[in-house]
Image (tube, rainbow, N blue to C red):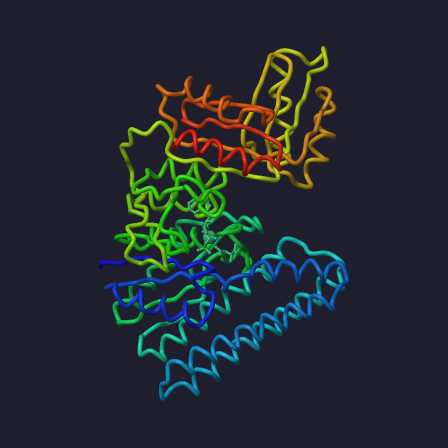
Length: 454
Ligand code: ADP
Ligand code: ASP
Ligand code: MG
């Protein structure tokens, strides 16, 4: 079976016009499986509502709920107005019923958060998933108004995970098994439409795969059904040499390897969820990143091996970073020092982005989070701790090893007067990372992009 998994993100799901575009695009495929995000802004609003409820601001929470409800009702109304069909009255009724059902479920959860005065991760996931639950159902219904045989499939039936709320780990064997049902649906001529981003823990509660998780849903499904290709449709024409929203000179990259695309995502290129390429890579399924608004542009093709002669493939950046420096007490010098530092990181499950070490000190770049207070308490046992928040991490991805020395010189030359806090190079991963003050991140990225890509 010639299956293509197509994923449409928040901007592609923005309004009735983009919905129409999505439905037009999927018509061109023999066996499409469609994964969608929530409509633009919805996930962020849902989380804001959860936080507002937990901090007793029910007025704000209710206001958000109303806004989400009306926005989706209007979207359906506009879609059906522009696509007249004899079934429209029925379609509208079923969409409104689904919106009501999900909104009343959401309101109950928000009341619970307000009563508890907190927003536990499990509750946050149930709240955040409402966006995709609504958008996927409504799009499948609207497809019927254009005479397409679209069929909604509840993602919880397919995406089975552990109970790590906020960033759940998929149970690949179970997902592969459950996705068997997709082929039956395709065989009978229907196009499955599935909400991305969320899944189900073993106890039946809702989990999420982390922000931008719909990309991951698409590749998990693509891997499970042995898709011919996985296509990520978004608002830019592929993966660029840098985020085009911040660096206007950035150019789309024709082809990338799974490895380099993953590193780019991990080091901040928001265009893909960092775990997306794993299921595709395992089954050697090509992944394409394409532009909804410029469907003919080639976009980026991600495959096992890509041979590039470039000195650097791309530049990613991350903000809200913190530098933690630990200088060993004399008593814990030597081999036990680093072990103790990394033990503390492991216990608190804090991932590290870049590290610099000397024999008695270590500087670590981490994403800022609430756990950092706990981390510094744990590290005081090992040495003196110095915390520098509000940093930015800029990473040059896919560095040509022969050019590495010269690249370090380029970094210093191009950044000129901008102070650099740390610089690291990993030969194995071909990544050169630079830490600067957070408010210099964009400027430094632009300067580096200019000197590396001309
Ligand atoms: P979607 O809603 O489709 O998932 P996202 O907003 O998550 O879309 O991802 C697309 C955005 O990713 C682009 O608009 C762009 O600003 C940003 N982005 C960041 N880094 C890159 C990059 N290297 N190449 C392309 N886009 C990037
Ligand atoms: N809607 C979710 C988010 O905004 C997931 C996604 O769009 O991929 O993170
Ligand atoms: Mg995204």
